[in-house]
Image (cartoon, rainbow, N blue to C red; front, side, top):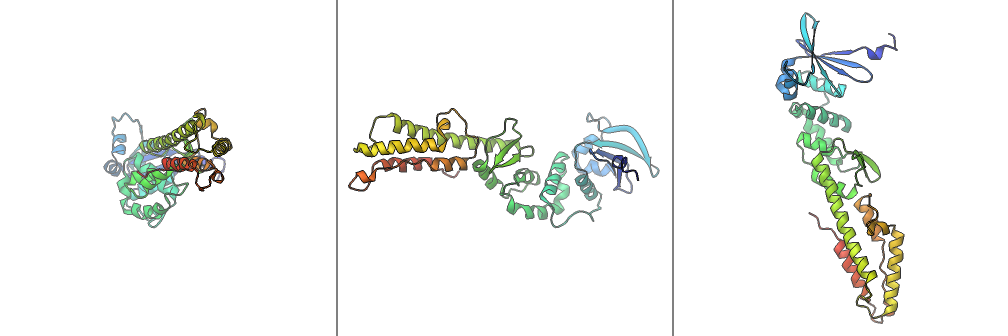
Length: 312
């Protein structure tokens, strides 16, 4: 075989013994031809039903007719599908299931099934297999790298871990990239192509609201403490001076001065922001007080209380 031309030789998959339709799918490496029954495709998928309509505006049907084993075959062209996943789905539709995994599949394969069946509105054809597959991956859905579980769960109608993952992404996600195609989660890139748009918008809005709330509290606290010439309930100016100087130095060391002044946006996640603000110290001068308690400490306690989050 000539290796230079082999990749361009179409691979034919004879799926139905009474086929009347050729599905043509091209990839950068090779073209695939699936010999299938058009009647089965019409029944299982409203999308394919429209494609197979001679008057369809989709224009996926070719005017060419090819004869195979004495039968005329219409040609339908599909685009951007995974050839192996398409083959498995078509085999399931034609009751040829020996090659279909019945116990477990990789997360990438599960995602490919969800993408294909969502595109052609035929997720029901996987009902006999999907629960077993989903059972394998639901337990790890919260871990970084499995964010597309939100899409998979939506397509398959499985709500396990969805709320928990959404909440986790609010805390662990950075801001969207300028092209809105990805964000960082714990330092790792998460592509947004498959994430449900409504869910993604909700996650990013919740993240933004929480950061705005915390920054507003810090701004209010700092403006009050630094700008106002008051003792904050402490009559000892040595104590107040110590607290003032320590706070200023601590804020500068946090690297959040521009964020607090609204000159710079925080693009990291909420957890990292809270870690940085958690390091801001408001020292109190208890050694200046014979009774061992400085009123300035009440400010620190009040601040941390206001910053606390209430689970919704």
